[in-house]
Length: 274
Image 1 (cartoon, rainbow, N blue to C red):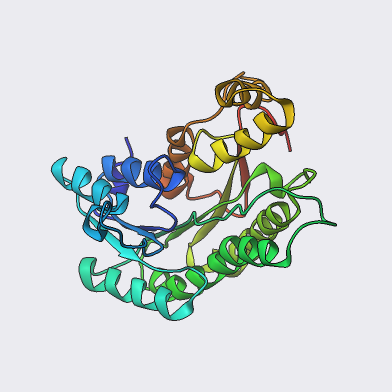
Image 2 (image 1 turned 45 degrees about the vertical axis):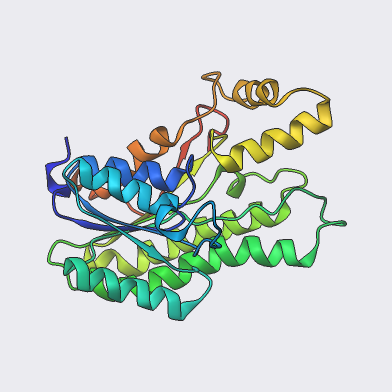
């Protein structure tokens, strides 16, 4: 469908969750012929889940079995030295970098501003906002080397557009990411590099299920019922799945979206309309 993505090289951060948006994006880009680098934190080694069996490697093996090219790399997006090493390894493996998907995020839990711990704020803002800044800073020089420009897509949230009670750090981090998107779009437009944000709503991921657990506890209902409650917030009456987000991200990475930049596109089934 997007033939121009064939042999493009994409880095996707935060791709280590089995039900996460990152792995969905990696699979979708690979289907279009892109070479993908899946990155996430180094997992804690344990006898029942050794490093070589982490989910990053599982996805890489599946992509390779389908004829694609993929690489798993560990990096903490809040650590500049690890990011630079990841970018250097990507360039060494594939010879170029065309696309950066800043997907890494954190959600330590919900609490009021009055009761929120400072550490929860720091983790959330550092991973989502600082992480996107550091990864973009490291990749931009490689995007500028390309003849036809490059793509940066930031995974923000509708929570970056409208504040939600007890989600202060998350809303602040995603709001910062939306404004960083606009800033970089203006800075890089002259080099034909587009920068956009995708703003999911309620998504059936491990993070989405944590949100459902909070609702279940508050309302005294089961987890599956809480998932239905989240789905009912959307005009389309369901939660998103990672593929819904991946489809829009893939479009933004393609030449068909070459005149779209600085935008924050809701992919929420009709929860948010601005």
